[in-house]
Length: 102
Image (cartoon, rainbow, N blue to C red; front, side):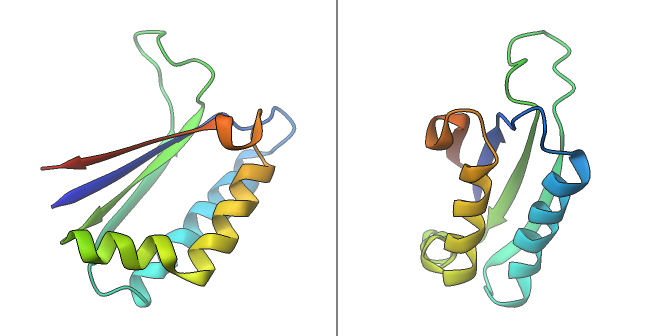
């Protein structure tokens, strides 16, 4: 199983409903990508006060590397990724991605 973990530093003026709308659109890719088995998103609670700038994020779970590559190359994912970048502080630098094999 691969976990695609994405943490986002949204600009202050981007409302939570706008953030979650993009996340729901990404989650809908489960209908297009067979190996995308789970998609979860939420706000950063930051109990340890170590990631205050990254206020929201998601974890997409894939059953294989090939499924993750299909997701990365999917035209809807690419368009939604560009939208996310436009919503962050610092553009691409406003997003952190970790891909973890579990």
